[in-house]
Image (tube, rainbow, N blue to C red):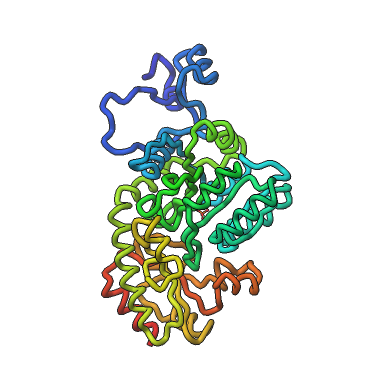
Length: 398
Ligand SMILES: *Cc1c(COP(=O)(O)O)cnc(C)c1O
């Protein structure tokens, strides 16, 4: 490698030796750029005539391998050649399709029960750019069609199902069919389900977005997002430039941590689901619980729809205590096993108080109308022993 260079030059240079034996595990490519043998080779890669890497913001082998893996999970057993990309966060994954596909004057039709950050992104960033969100009830096909018919400037329908934190569901097949009829793109936030529980592309949806920070990573040790698109050409024309020019690319370390989590996704989601269903039944029968939101309970208003479009009910549950905000606070402070944290989808049980935490910036009247009452507690049920989870909750409710 020294090529006859001096000691200090040898220190500074990088080895470009190819790896002769393929690594069994995904390597972390910690680098910003790639090297070419000749100017001609560089020209062919830059022009796209030859496939290859250019610069870390444009693509990285670790990041791309994980993006492709997510695309294959979201299209499992579907005859779709989807493309995937990773972003620096879930919010970046939500923002890119909106910024890449829409222009001033276009409108977004969406629901009022969304992840708090998504509502704020639409209100604070997109609306001033001339891209207006319309908050409606996507569960009502008549209202949906009325809106689409009345307003041809609606170019995109943005869906979250089950929604945060009340777990209401939207019929993906119904929305996708109407969107197609009226020439709208569809985007679904699949964070709460992961492809282990719900694969929106199967129902005709155009784009799936994720906060991989949650169930996909599962261990709470990296922030990243993902976009999986049904049409690789559209992805390439509109979303790849948005990613490259705005720059919220994922880094190789976070992609690698995400990939470690993906290996156990199926096992984890199964356990999250059985634990959450157990807890849901326990809460439903408890005298101090007023109301339980869990799509796996026959008492849930979207039980039939969830059974149709999901392969299980997941690890997210929310419930209201009799005694409102004070009872909710006392309950959360008394928990020993569960941790109070503003995230979800980790292997350990987490609790959050939407009214004072995630949905704090939403007007109280609007919040209440979405079922986010002061006494509502959201729980991300972990994969611990169900006996410890039930004992913890029972004790905190005493
Ligand atoms: C956390 C979350 C987001 C935002 O993701 P970040 O990775 O925190 O940027 C978006 N949607 C849902 C449903 C989430 O839970």
